[in-house]
Image 1: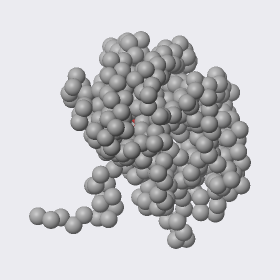
Image 2: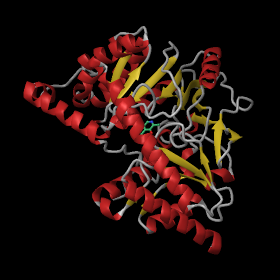
Image 3: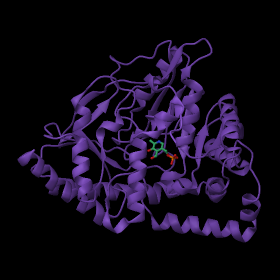
Image 4: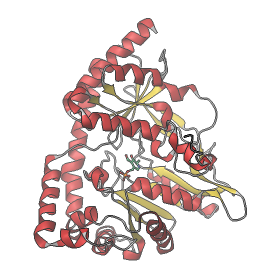
Length: 419
Ligand code: PLP
């Protein structure tokens, strides 16, 4: 049989960066000992966090809340005690003027972005194509296939800032980027996946001003940011603005399997998310939200972020940078300044093969990385730079990360010697 697939489906049936990444994660999960996984975005398993979550789960079982939650659909905005706790957390800790009507739960922030991009981009009621603007690339691989109309995603090339110690940084090139009448929303991840860039406060303020000039929202993807999970190594303060759609997630707190995303935004936009949730999934899963509700009620989530999560990743980052210096000491490479998230973004200006070929060679040696070309969603035109970069995660076991980096050094030397 040769079924006739819809045009919409055809986009999702072929090779996509997100699928490659998740397939590789599946490989490493099934047969972990044989792979050095520097690929996907799984967070580290931090013992203190895991103990807290296990105790919380036991609490839900003992109190009968688990039976109650698992035997009924929740409302489509999410588990109410959690919505209240999140609103109170931001009100009391950061002075945000919000209530539970400003908060929605989704099936992970990947799902939040699918809904938000569907709301603000695509062909509008007057037949015009509206865009999600990504003012800074490289940007998160997962945005690439989220717009039902592929051309709805629009990205701009960055400005390069040279730094000391073999580091560099991308910055928004405001000479090149400005939203226009066809912009539906502006979106940035902060910290940025894959580079670990943390957009400066002035850059965010400038984006807000640009968004206001064309009256569109600014979507901030805070999957790694402050106040939780707080994987940030610079000074950043969370802020509220009526125009900002703030997207958070429990994943990098250590609960990716719970598939729980959180959106904080104006009540009318939250109502749209509620409608989409009802249609797509009837209700969101309450379990992840219920598990962490006490952490938000007490504010303990902030202490976990500051005292356990941030220092853990700061240590892992320092280790990984040390191994890079040791094993790639004779290779020409730059590292993007790691200001947050769980990745290192490496740029090899004279790479004799493509990053995709490097990925394939490393995979043959059981090392998983992500080739850089997937991280330029919405960017038109050829650009050699896309094929000269790779992303490494340093979140998995130190042994795997060190071995992976050692093998990376060997493959780079071989490529330079033999092509
Ligand atoms: N946004 C960014 C920047 C990410 O790195 C990820 C996952 O790695 C997501 C969103 C999606 O997270 P989740 O759907 O697990 O909440």
